[in-house]
Image (cartoon, rainbow, N blue to C red; front, side, top):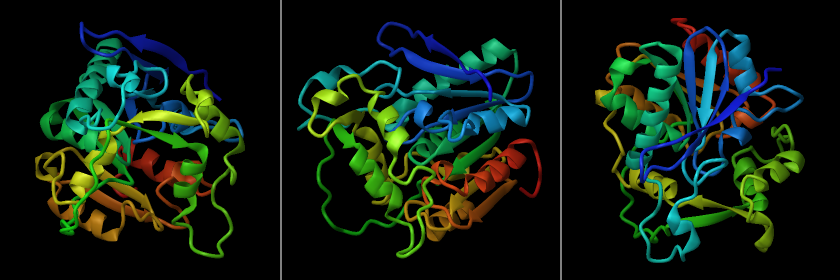
Length: 308
């Protein structure tokens, strides 16, 4: 088990402070980009049985970084969090969040003296990473899209307005974590009831305990970005990505299904690109019993293997 270094990255006036964590090594730098509802401490850095994805990457020799977007974990909360979410533009859209990723990339490059990093992104975070990669390929070695969001054809149905922010309880998380597991299959979550993870999740928001039920406040932008992608409007153009790219996903993932992966594979501008569908996993495979296969597949690709 490694000891993570946690710092706060200050920005220019008007920019949020960002919590940044690192498992330092002299190896190649990898930055994890989290998804829509929980920060780096509950994803890449969360330890089940004393071992996290960050630990696994560090053991493979990588210099591992992660951060929290504004509105999550240890980073600054947007001003709109103190006001009603109704009638406000969704906070934290991917195109704006990419500026935060750009700041972290610049910080990592300055700290390490390297000219490139690799990105490992999950779910909504793949939209942020994809937007960044489409414009900054000269700064990237490799790109891993875990459970990526892809464009789907518009259904023609009217979509409800997305508020500026929303509340997510542990029960909300558990419901979506298990909904794609086939009926009758045994639980695949490492913590089937989220006993410890749930408490740690609520602790990421100091105000969670005063709400009924206890819940974490998160930006509404990610929901708006995913809704836009599933209505035919992606946050980035995959054809502009030339970086070697791996798509990796659980076989039961309904958020990132076979058609989604095929759409991305067809349009990615990368000469080197792979799609790996792993058995017995959902959109949250990094929190599940099958996570070792995910870690192995991503780790081998990031290390430069040509057939991960």
